[in-house]
Length: 217
View 1 (cartoon, rainbow, N blue to C red):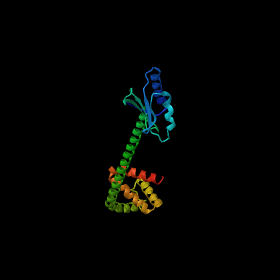
View 2 (cartoon, helix red, strand yellow):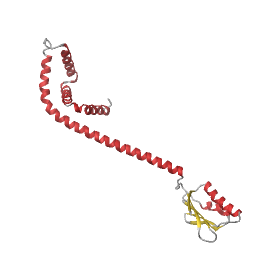
View 3 (cartoon, one colour):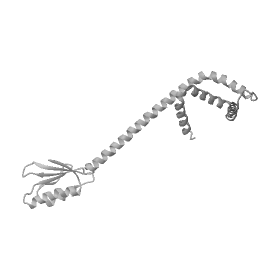
């Protein structure tokens, strides 16, 4: 029989007291103690020699074996005591297992986030490509639209234009003056592209939000 235990005072005392009780009941058993394969307490039934093995213990010692023999035969019960925390108790094993599971779940969650981020970047790139393609198709509309707006600016006295339209034209004019013609034209192009393709609205908003966050705005 082989019993695996941690090398600590409780387990040593348990083996020692077992040998001592056998001796007291006149049924002594021979025992032997080895450290990493070296016999440091040769086969004997003198219980007082049990702790002599500690004189040979080193910081690097790993396995302490206690052999308890049956009669004069070589048959024995083997106690393997593990030094330097190689042995894990049930509680330690369960804790390490729980920690390993938590670490695995964290890694899996990170993998999912990385995958999701890659997919989002791919969607953004596809959106950019689509927008660039739509820009060229909408440029003619924009070129036709700007003269109409400019013409409207110059016809502020036209009685056919209602108050609401005049207000809108006024906002457009002030926006163009505030940001410049190039920025205004680009904004109009993007706005018209989204208006003509409402299915991309959410993706465009996500793209804008991400860019604003990158720029700290």
